[in-house]
Amino acid sequence: MRILLCAALLAASIAASARADNLLDLTVVDRDTGATLSTYADRGKLYVAGTPGHRYSVRLTNRSGGRVLAVLSVDGVNAVSGETGSPDQTGYVLAPFESAEISGWRKNLDEVAQFNFTALPNSYAARTGRPANVGVIGVAVFTERTPVWRQRGEIVREAAPPAPASAPMDAEAQRADSAAAGAAMPASPAQPKPQAKAEAFARRDERLGTGHGAREYAHVDTTTFERASHRPAETVAIWYDSYANLVAQGIIERPIVRNESRPFPGAFVPDPPASR
Image (cartoon, rainbow, N blue to C red; front, side):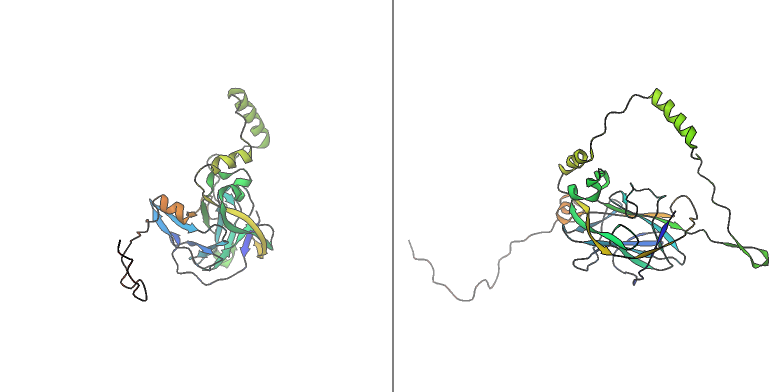
């Protein structure tokens, strides 16, 4: 599997971020203002408020002394391959204590299509028929399998991690299994078209999603990475929506508006109105 190596080395951020077991920090940066978005905690989740139309980037900071693989999913879509997100897919490799900003959907080794906050129907996920997971940014973090020192100083790789309990079937067995399942199960109803699914979700409150914006230069290189395990060492996530929607949901405390008298509302003393 081709893995991407982040080229940019950035200063580690001390702003509010999503942390899990001290392996990786995840923050969201508004690129139009330069501000790192504040996080709001609610029922075990972290939220940020995005501004419609603004570009944003995802800042990943490796807090460990070894390389990590960060599989980035935006709205349930892998930000590198465009596949429906799964931890076993490709991602970005960060060197020890490296910080990098991912600013868009990876188009090739030199370009991305910018992330921007947009109305849900215009999000990349909705436009490709996958609106169900719009509104969340997630990272599956893997540590690297390291060499083992043996006698005489030679370095050899450890044996590959054990295969999952249910190993995948070969192609012939899969076809036979699918045929058997098809004979035993009723036919599935026709699936709605992508546009129909997007419109169904659009009828909800006007939620934010991530658009597929203008292309920009963002070079990366490829590298190899051997995962220490089949499962992520940790998974980090931040949910997002507009400020108004987060207030309406009670995630951000509703601001209190006070109508207070002002001691100096004018500059001069006007005449009083004529008596009736």
